Length: 145
Image 1 (cartoon, rainbow, N blue to C red):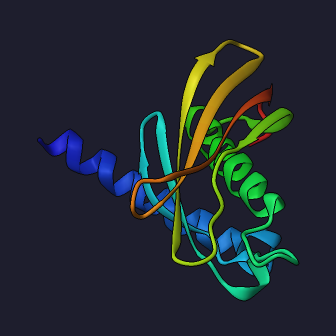
Image 2 (image 1 turned 180 degrees about the horizontal axis):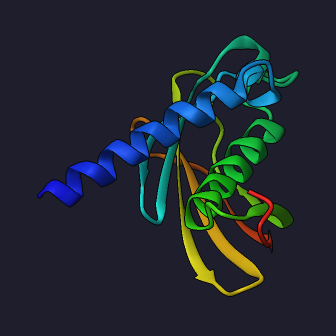
């Protein structure tokens, strides 16, 4: 039980560190938040604001792409804390519109090797409705973290 509490404390410190690093970045401008970190899983949230919408009043595809890419990047970073990771491939699928509410993105690792990490993420409304999903591949840059 003690080791589990230490792990939760370490994950909470990681959330605080990343939130501090995100100040005044694109992530911060959008209003993204890390909701949960678990080994192999990250949950990111975004409350939809007017600046997230496109000209027809729905969430812009670029907002989903940013959320999905960022959540997948975080889960890859969590898996390789001693290294840096960079996106080398991002695949997106848009399946339903969103106009208001909260978007919840869940990302997880699909495969990991010495040089790359493959991930997937799902962006849903609070109701559970799937809005977008994506896959990503991240190159591992050894010892750069």
